[in-house]
Image (cartoon, rainbow, N blue to C red):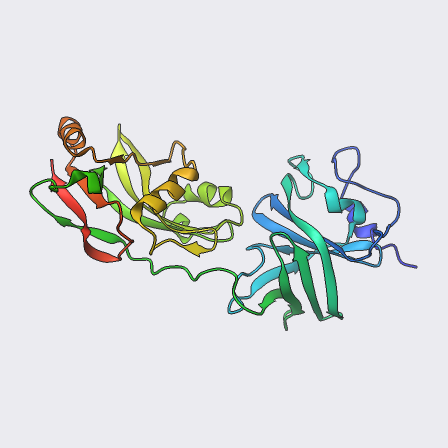
Length: 315
């Protein structure tokens, strides 16, 4: 009988890694366990492991499980892992195989509908990953994973910013608005999905922000501005969060969701906002040499293109 863990053990030294390195496979009581681990290694990915014949048959999924049946994700077949990996989490030392932080993203049981050398069809029963999936091999022997059934999240909104109308005077009813600084920078919408963002092509430092979101999807609206001689990305709106579109939500709800993210770093911050504080914010903008202020209606949805719900008032 072949040793299904031989390849696994050959890649690991139990004296150098906290990972379990058992001598032989061992089955769980039910024989149908699974685990998905979020793995911040050289590149962020998710490890899907399905129990089969005393081991965890494993695939690395760079973008995580697909939420939409219209989009398949790459799934790289890796070595079988021991059953002890069902509960493993921790730090694999840098320089070791798979070095980085590993956390348990979801765990539970699954039902096998089909299992062959080229196709694995199954139903996951976990807290975060419930649903039917199929893993299938392509012509070049790579694997892909496909979600079967309905999408489990809203589609991403169109990536077009909401633009303010210009006014010379502050609104007559300031209590209906939140007031923010106009920074005089460049608008930037940042879509994040699967721990990655296309905005990192132009701004590589945004890879760190995207990875920090893990599997949480988002679309952030902000502005690249120069403050104190340094460029910083100031976020002031959230269009999409964790699989749900927020564009129809009022500004107050979007703002609360944005602040709950706690975005704070040397490269990015959540821009301040002051509901009802028209005069003081405009005065502060003048004193700081900023172009002006933005007045945003508290009850307004996010409307791509020019909108009278947002007003730019020169300082």
